[in-house]
Image 1 (cartoon, rainbow, N blue to C red):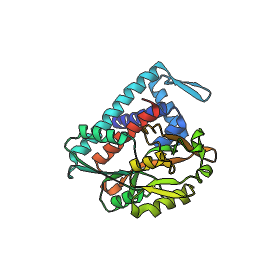
Image 2 (tube, one colour):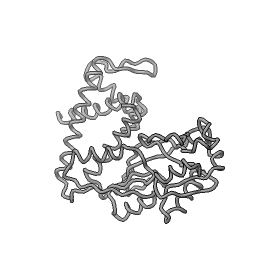
Image 3 (cartoon, helix red, strand yellow):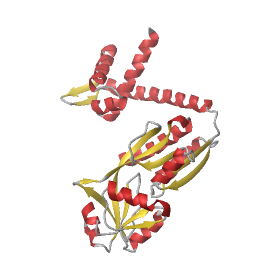
Image 4 (spheres, rainbow, N blue to C red):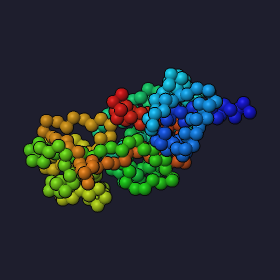
Length: 307
């Protein structure tokens, strides 16, 4: 009986922390994979069991009472400790070679990936890390045929049940364009206007047709396409006013430079959005893969929230 009470309290603590951190019963319910009515009932039951109010409720808004502030800080600490115990137990029990093979998009330029590698290496110096880059399809093939353990890539196909689809963030799409191009005087630019300027894509020769097909037929970019082998080459082509380079705000984008203007790309009045994820095979899930993905997500979250 006592064990069931503790288990119930632990579950209620998880729900309570989720509501506070999401600042929304609806979003917390989605995060916890239960209905909004169920999570609301669990919080009400928790308050009844404790005999105190944890939330001040006013219409659809709520704030924490002093008791709620205390319960949140203590619950957060307990949940973090339990998660740390779980992850460390899994790590100790791993019986695989201590290596982590990471693949990332050739067009990715944010420093958060480098920071995640450095932080992971600091925590787990016993793990050997190898890193490769490529186009979306090249990375997908590496993952399928066990050439890497996980990849940082954009979502281009429906999520597969064979893979862990660990979503990092939904990021806005930008166009880097020369200041000599008249379009650079705008505050934002729509896809239709960009069709008159060549689109520069980062791709190997073998993947050029695949990359062009995706940007043209899925995202709606039109006009002429040019190709660069790497990001540096692509940005030099932009500085030379040969075309525009589509980039995504995956974490911290480096400065565009004096010769380049970076503009939000708009579609139907909204900035074009892309999903970025860490993908790995479910059958190959291990502690180190999960830990690296969590470190990277936390670094990106800190950029988004300004912390």
